[in-house]
Image (cartoon, rainbow, N blue to C red):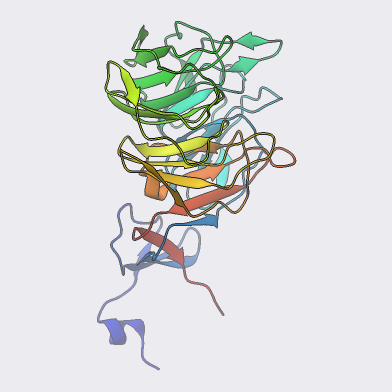
Length: 321
């Protein structure tokens, strides 16, 4: 029988971790996970099951990417627990200093930001914490304590906007040390989603009717963008101002609806497998390679789903006997 080398004229690389930027057609054996993997192109956008969270979570915050994700917080337990995702499974990370839910997050797995949120009894916090891949440390406090807000940007150039109570459109900008006021949302709301950067952000959905509003931020002010096709609150999102993804959300029934934004309008994309609301997302990477985790179905969920955009490459595992 012919070998792979004889057929393709090359040997399979043996590595301890997956390549950070593999090319289409590349094949390798991962000795850590003991699986053979390859890089392939997808014909259409699709959601696929990923590794389950160790702790079922609702109203948590997310950061990072599909292969280096981060989740922290939980309702109603106000947990400090943090988990890290490697594209296959979740493992425990460093604990938050302030256990809470309804908070916002942004940044990467090794340079994340968590801010705002709620903890019992009935407290909306200004607390900001910074994660270095191992532990959380205190950062500068928000000017306005609030929960159910959204975030965008990086640990040293972040944006926080919306939230409650009372429902607000207030926007704040973080420089890695302190928060300062930015331009307010045109429509004050909570339970919304955000993505992008501090100077090119997107805000969409939320609890203020109608729930399909989208706004774009240029570093100074918010302006109206194209409306979501399915208005919703408790939604998650990822990507950039001109290439974004909105997924999940709704209340009291979780939605599977996924929509893609091109900087002008939203179009319907492939639906999630499990409808849920109050979920978190990996929001530091491109919208075409994000992940959704946690949320509420009939109870707090451990489910993780990974999205691959149409035509974008994806790493797959060789299966079979």
